[in-house]
Length: 567
Image (cartoon, rainbow, N blue to C red):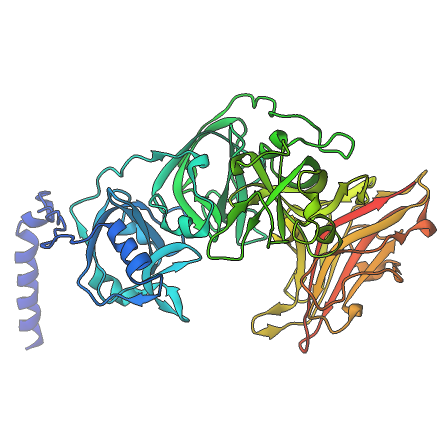
């Protein structure tokens, strides 16, 4: 019986082996059909009509849309570069709106130029600090539409085509009042800025020590806008080009600050050439301060002196910010300065942020109305304030022959959102010192990662500072400290024998004490009193800031400036 079955199987094998397998060598495969998505309904609202429905009819109340409102638009921005996270923007002939969608790699399905129809019923509409979005509810605010809901609301129509061209934008045309910003029809649209330059030439778009980095673009009239870039985008490590050029991207806002979002590095075009000398006059020193024209065309985290006439304030007590040039005034937290004491055009003025304390007390027009029309010098950083060039983070002023002149020294570190010339050494814990945005740029250390406290010992250490030939040497630094157990968690030391690489605990350090500093329970930045370093004169030293936290308590320490001076 076994032999019979063997013969049968052998015969079958020979038959199969001798049969031609034409299907394996034919080479002609049937191509799958191209499926072109189509919708069988139409839009019944424009994007602008939908946004106005939210702004006017709903009075900006976060709302679940219960009407059969359908909009359509072309995808003008998606998450392909990583600069937008779980977001994209669609635009029609009337405006644009940002979509918050809880799904990664949206660009695989929704490419630039793709026409979309959106059935908004069942979605939420709201605004995130003046930026209107379509999405869902999260924590009582506008959030992302869950991925499982996306297919019920978003419908592609046809294959991707060519996106609309970016519309030229003049920065001078942007409104400054919050009520006007949220209603600006160009919000979220694809725009381009021509003949502009980056302030921070040669810096990376987005260093890896913070999630998002603000850079500044300035046009030839001195108007500026913030370019916000994520460290997760694929061009984060690219450097900002020099010269003048064109940028394209999405116009957005955060509160009263206009912002600009690049979709990818290809949106940065044709930069190069020589940057002409800045307009205006001055070098930014106390003896030769910037005039208003020069200051309005500049920007940066390093403080400079600016001189102008006090002409008014931006009143902030109502629903809108209103520039006011005649008293009585009610807002004491800012003032307007201009090249002329008679100026009443906001475009020719610089708003100046007045910090609480001696500077505000001396300059504000509420308690000192007689300051109006007087010439003043202020020492601060040049950055956008009320969506136009301004002066912030004041540490000095000069009025009527008196004021405060901050100490400058032979060693200064401003911490422009980086560690600067300092290095960090983590003895214990996963948290480390990192560059941060506060007070015009600082460094921060905290062992608190919501909702937990972590044990840490982290040092921030200066480079070698030579005190050879120096006398009357003093240290001053600017800090904010909050939520610490006590000030023993945030100590300052000097060493003459630390080698810069090993565990700092292996070196000899002298703790600096007896100076006034932060209370340890506030976010307000304060300058310490002068700390004598006379004991180290003639030596090479390093200065270190040592942070401690435990699993029971972890405070936050922020440092924005370190100055070592001498006679």
